[in-house]
Length: 91
Image (tube, rainbow, N blue to C red):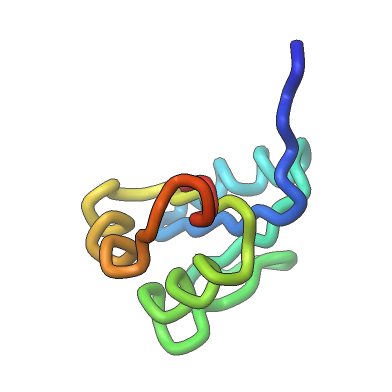
């Protein structure tokens, strides 16, 4: 099986269950994990200026983004940033 491994992956989690899943994924993938200050644990980076601001910054910095949470939240935050599938990060 040929698996593509992006150079940099940002993971966003918004709930305690999301943090638990993020920890399991971080054991298998090279992730930078972001969450709220309230949910932050060791190895997680708190949102800088809130979730939306941090996700927008990551869109231009990382080659892939993973969101553990409601799809609608991710869509509303990223929709204005989308250009095309050839230059945007994987989401």
